[in-house]
Image 1: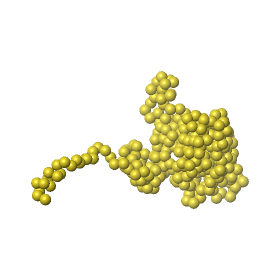
Image 2: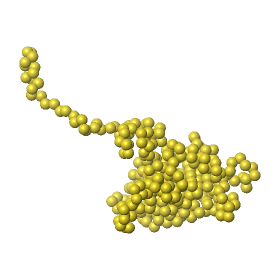
Image 3: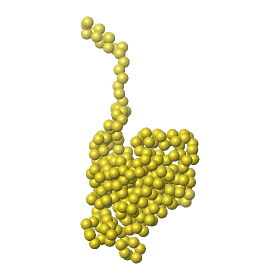
Image 4: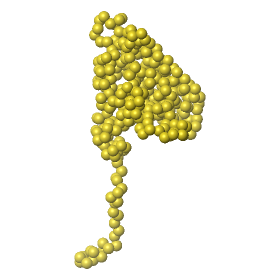
Length: 307
């Protein structure tokens, strides 16, 4: 074919040029973009870094099991109360039935509820360790979550183990009505009993911690820590501004704002949490001291300065 005919044949063809501004779709579960610095991250590397962006330090949400394993000494976590779950006592239905939401959350997370608890060692100290999973209906506190938390307090008291709870929640689980709201009083009373027994309790507030959860057991801890950038409060800033008709300070309800104003005791990056909590337990817990009263593993000062 003459070269002139070849050019004539190409003249009728149409070509599509991909836009340079349109990024290719990323495969699910392999790559993701950091919402803070916009870097593209490999999921495997992010998991190895405890779900913290290596470029800007943004703390991604973390499943409950990953969180307890990141805190506990290797191969020491033994789950307790694994079968407790909500039963939809009010047969609640809105956009969809509450029972459907529960089933979907269980399938999505592999958990029976939004809270897991168990025995573990942390820095060599025997502890009761718990974590909330925001993927499970926003880690809202219903009757089952409240029961698991109350039993964790009771176990820590019975076995003289320090209690360490990693908390994230959108608040009370309104699909359970008053049965949900009463968990605020129930868990707060359990925290008071543990305090009177002189057993240490450390709470770790993660993003987000809101509503009736914030207003109950997390803020009753002996030591209150938070992860960087965590949003912590009772209700959202927009609702507060509409109520008080004033603009809120910059950074209001962030962990950094709260530590500056004395509401929490420290902001600790996730990779440093295990060592930090371990050092705190070194101060609060008595180990290898035969003369310790009744062989107590842990003790914190009670009212009047006695242990």
